Length: 151
Image 1 (spheres, rainbow, N blue to C red):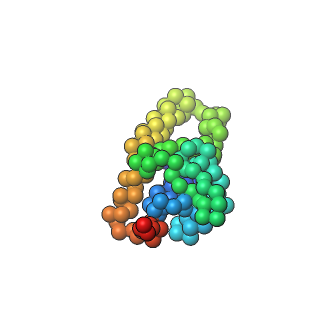
Image 2 (cartoon, helix red, strand yellow):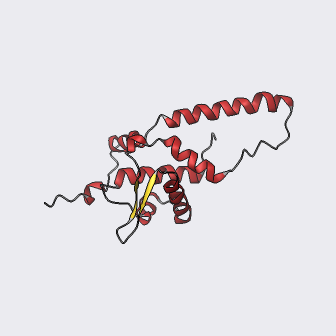
Image 3 (cartoon, one colour):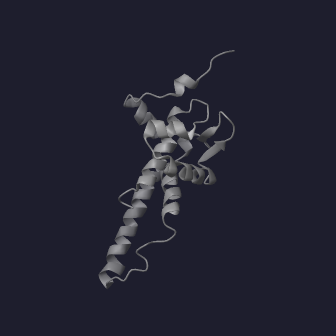
């Protein structure tokens, strides 16, 4: 868990992209792939899993796409990571590997504790916080182009 997979980083980027660029309209997957350079084959499967997990909502139709299922301040990075981890491995790959007593009783529990600490930190980071970082760093958002003030 200390080294995030490509799929995990793509999932976090996709959720952040949707939150940062939506502007009230659904974000199409082709827009995400254009902005983020995420391969579409990774993206579609991951977006569908995020929909099933209640992080995103899929919107059908010609102007459809994806939007956040909840306010961005109510979605944590930890939630996104858990969805991807469930996709990547159904069970612990080290569980069935032989280990010495030191490995089984000291190293693996230590690694498990570290993983729990990391997940706790990721749970404390909201998508809104990442959006605010992007805004402060001057990353342009396409959301303002999607706003329509016609009355």
